Length: 497
Ligand SMILES: [Zn+2]
Image (tube, rainbow, N blue to C red; front, side, top):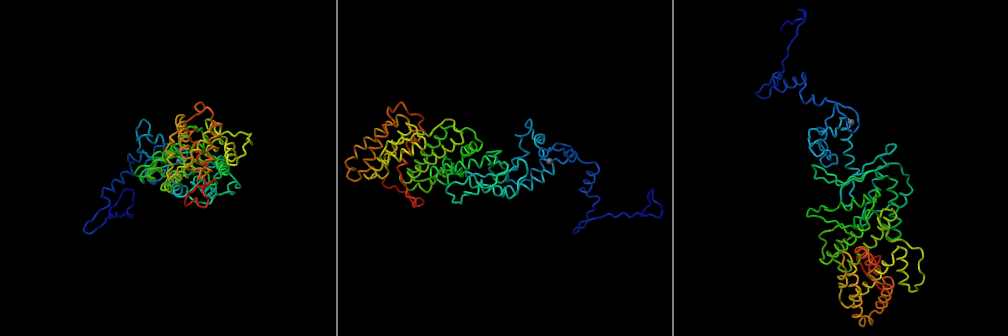
């Protein structure tokens, strides 16, 4: 006990010195280095805390804040979420490549961080979808007012359905989509990949108006009815464009699909050549896999894995479906007015001169879908090819060797002339034997031959892009393939016409 200045003699002060006893050891708190440091920091403020007090503008709320600590906050985000894109230790986004200056480009205040942190978990679980085999999150933004949670949930489902490829058996919204009230909001699709520690954005499609998106879905549906593929949708595009994978099953060139989505959704121009390039590539890739009888790549292609063991029948089924999907895709792109060149323009006057029902049916299809004169010629050449294939099958060449005469990377003028010569040669070769077995094949071949020469006339002058030619040729080929509807799932079959 002692007397202190300023206190009268009756007042006394007791000094208690706390200590912690642990086992045999006694620690006097007031002399412990941690305690002394804390007191010192409190009284003087250390260098670190001085830095934190510096005022900066938060890049999210736009307010001046003294609690900005971008690095400190951002390390707390989940390693597998898109928030991890904002990594302060990367120098790439820092001014003058000085990572310590990162906050000049991007800074977060505490209150924004807290909102972000609590939103992150919800977004990464509720707004996450798989599109084209890639991870994606959908972010919504109300244009004039905030969006109801129920509205968000509904649209997540709708967007998911719009991007689901055909094989994923799901019930499609048919009426609901058209009848539901559409509010003014936009959404963004962020494609990302993560290894659990960090996250990289692969592609983002931003500011998608919900009204425009709904239009696109409607156009797909209309075209789907036209080509008699009810489930024709955005998701199917992923089944049409070949995507290579590496040994880890990572999709190497998936950006070609994502870019295609982006163009359709954002309304940017797509080259007709690109469309036909993908078509011929899909045929060439799948052809190689069918010949090798195994699908060890391009797993995304339409039912390739299921069909690959079915040899020629499988390949024909694949070609038929893919050709009709591409026809549909060209129609969608034409309706959206984003193709750089007009193809398949519908002519109004359909010739009624043909009396033969087989030819009339084909003519109706060609006119309805706007095939040009040359395209029609190639289409019939494809029909002739199919007839020869059937004849070969009857002559015990089950794999239809004529299919090897087609160059799946594109048919130039010379390829077409060569094919034409081989077709006539084979026809002469098989004619007498086939005439006894299946006269209808002979009759049909002659009809198609007549139509092909009618449209092609002077062959070398009229042919354009090699891949486009392939498309018209194979459309004709596949138009002759008939698939039993009930057996579509289990097997593929073609029957007599
Ligand atoms: Zn803020």
